Length: 108
Image (cartoon, rainbow, N blue to C red; front, top):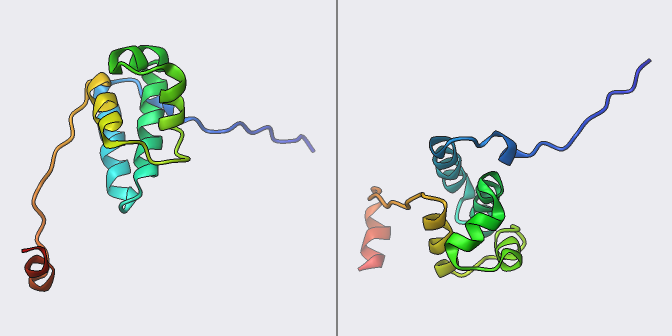
């Protein structure tokens, strides 16, 4: 019986267009459930697909610090996230969601 050879799946190999990258980030934000490191890891996947060195230059960061920030092992500063999103040619958007009255009143 022949052995099955497997390799690790790398999503960055499948993110080819800006639309695919944006859709991937959107899906990860929805799936993250508030986990900032999960979103940072998704940005790291997109940055690797684009080319980490180029993204680092465009974001004004060192390649090493960018790898660390987007490793998914820690939560990077929000200013780093904004720089990376811009360097990737992406935008973040917000939309209103309907909340139960008790939660909306607590926010006032």
